[in-house]
Amino acid sequence: MVTTAPTALEAELLALAGSVPDPELPVLTLADLGVVRGVRVLAPGKVDVELTPTYTGCPAIEAMTSDIEQVLHDHGIPEVSVRTVLSPAWSTDDISAEGRRKLAEFGIAPPRSHPADGPVPLSLSIRCPHCGSTDTELLSRFSSTACKALRRCASCREPFDHFKEL
Image (cartoon, rainbow, N blue to C red; front, side, top):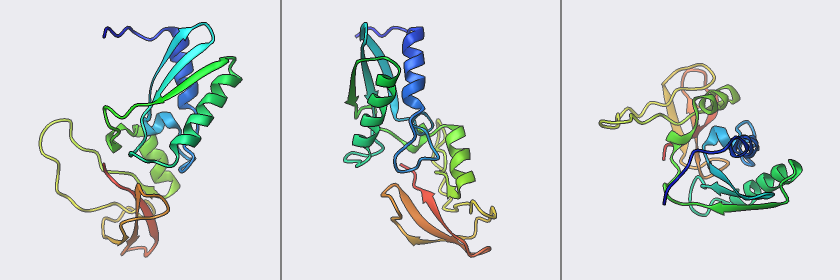
């Protein structure tokens, strides 16, 4: 299959779809999260959107789909098809730098980045988003959503969510 560069309209619609807030973490947009993979104009008024869930069975995928359809309908696109695409799989490396900044600002420790090449560092320290200390402890492997863990800082004693690395 030959892929072509997105048209100006496709880039505009991709930005619109990406501007939708994540239903579980509204501090992030779908673009920040890196789950909107592409938008193709199939015909005038007919658009196909590729969406990758953060994990298979993600309960937010239906809300994301509905919200993308709504924002594109509001922009004058009458026929919107949102397809779930599982390959390549989503990874926390897909979260933008802006998304990581927003998470930390919101009080959620962002996932650690993996290097583009070479071994993954084995550091287990998670930085507290409140005081910056790396002296933190795991309270629960699951928090308010499956993609987050609950931790507590030993320095400031504040509990916080950590967006787990995938």
